[in-house]
Structure formats: C-alpha cells, structure tokens
Length: 377
Image 1 (tube, rainbow, N blue to C red):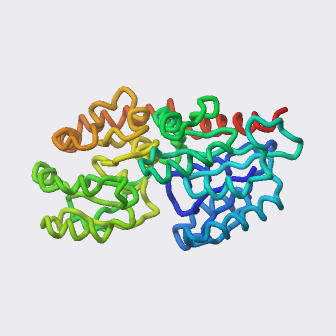
Image 2 (image 1 turned 90 degrees about the vertical axis):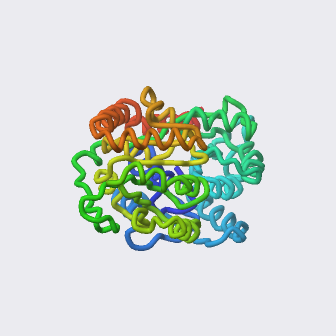
Image 3 (image 1 turned 90 degrees about the horizontal axis):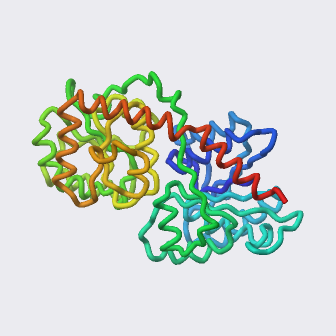
C-alpha cells in the first residue's frame, strides 16, 4: 500500500489517512505513507508520531510550492518505483494530481486487463470544491483512477455531475472516529484563549479560509452576541484569512467578544469546554470537526454544506440551515446556547449517532474491502 497526501499536519484528511495507515490489518496490508510536504514541526507532528508509533514508514517528497509540480512528480515516482505497491491511494487535490502523474506506468489503466505487477489507483474526494480550475484538473486525472472514494453521498453526486466520473468508479466511505478517545476528555480552561472567568464559548474549529464562511458569520456576529450576552465567540485554527478577519472584528468593536486561539492540538478539550460548535461553511465534504463535536456530545449549528445533513441525520433540522440564512443561523445558535437542556439533548443524540454510524472500525473495514478488491484477480 502507498498512501499519498499533501502534508501531515493535523487536519481532517490527514487524520483519516493516519487512522487508515495505522489501523489496517497488518497481516494483509503493509502501508507506506508519502507526504508531498516536509515533516511538520513541534505539536503539529502528532499524526507523524502516531504513524511512527504504529511502525508505519513515512517518506517525505519535501516540496514547498505549487510550481515544483514536476519535481514532486519525479521524486514521488522514484519512491513508488522502489516500493512497487499493489495499491496507491491519494488524498486531497494536490496529492491526487501528483500521485496520479507519478503512478503512470506503475498502475494499470482502467478497462485494461490487470498485469501481475500492475497496481490499482484510488483517488480520494473529500470536498465538493466549486473552483472551476480544480474541477477541470480533477476531471482529467480521475480518468486514470480505478476507484474514487467519496466521504459522503453528496460528494459522490458532485463527482458524477461536475467531474463526470462514471458511477461504477465511485465508492462512498464516510469518515470514522474512535469514540473512546473522546470519552471523559477534560474541558480546557477557556481563560487560556482570552475568555474571562465565567464566560461561555460558542466555538468554531477549522482553517481560516474563504471556504469556512467566517466572514459571513462575523458579519452578523454583533447581533448574535447581543442575543447571548454571556457568550463569546472562540475561533480555533489558522489560515490565510486571519489578518482580514482580525481587522474585521476590530472594525465591528468586538475584540473583547471574539477570540482568535490560533492552531491548537487540544481540540477535543476545547470542544468539551464549549456550549455549541458552529460551522458556517460555504462548501464541505463531510467535516471532521462536526464528528469530533458529536463525539464529545456537543450540539452543532452548521450550514447545510455537503455531507452535513448525512452526518446529523434525524437531528439535522434543528442544527443546520442553508448558507446565507442569517435569521435561521441566529435562531438555532440562540436556541441551543441559551437553553442548556435542549442543547444537551441534541448533544446526546449526536454522540449516539456517531457511535451507531461513524465508527473507526467500520471505516477501516470498508477501506480494506476496497483495497482487497483491487488486487484480487
């Protein structure tokens, strides 16, 4: 097995890869992980440490910019030629592109009889990205894949319509989570992130990027925080929009009510200390942060981005609205944050749904069955 990803800093796709690589049946699968980027530093290397603890080899292509595409392909092709994997699985846009180009000649072409030495190629689609450029590129690279794993049915529909992928190539495998790791997690001390004693938190966790819709959320944050005078908004994560978002908060006069925590390795503890998790995304695939919030028994208010309703199931309506529905978003946050009993009940149902539908073991078995199908004559 060769598992190829853009980088190994902590994130949803990266966490999924680490779970797969460290959880596959070692009597049947011998994975090697390839990161296009260099090894992350400090606390951001926790997934690398998880892989190393599980004795999974990690190789670094060590490229740092998009213009190094040719270098990345050559380096990865050389590494794959040394390994001679039976299956190559790529994750995320850049890894899908580089991994597919690097595997040419190593993997068989679809609809061509499999040779003894040829390998299967699996691509991963984790978000329904509206970018026409990415859609055009992935439309071409998807032709080379034997199978494309989609994290939700709505992402599979996106692939069929926007990327024009044949339905028989698409496999839906939802993200999974190890519920036990979130059981009994102690709450973080919110004062570490600037909240005064006694303040309650509405928390966002994710990359500070246009995709996540924080500019939209902050545009009506004054109304939200006016309705909830005991609450502050805590933004956990980093990204390219941070300077603009911080300036926007200052212009709104909300510097004392909106707190930028930056990247943190203690997301479960922060979620555990919060009253509600919000996700105002413009697009998604199946957001891992919602799985984490559900695992700690937290109520959610999210936009109905791809995969969200599939995650929430029967309790999607009181916890989600269409992107752009300001009044609906305000109303749902107020309902779950102001009424602790109602919020606790939603959190309980969220946790039960994760336990029933999104276990790590179910995800691993699905990937094992997929990989085995590609090497069985």
